[in-house]
Image (cartoon, rainbow, N blue to C red):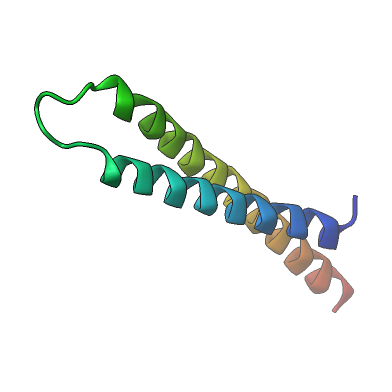
Length: 78
């Protein structure tokens, strides 16, 4: 796998995670906030929000690692 391909995969992962987070946040915000509301209605979007956070964190690690690798290669070549 080339560095550019891995970098693109990391960026795509961040974008997917952000989209999932936005969707989950909108679902949570639009839910009925009264005390009589069923907590199960909010549980799934909360779990999805946590999954989105993990997706973004993992993808950011990929981008960071690729950046460090490219930097190392440049240092070696220079």
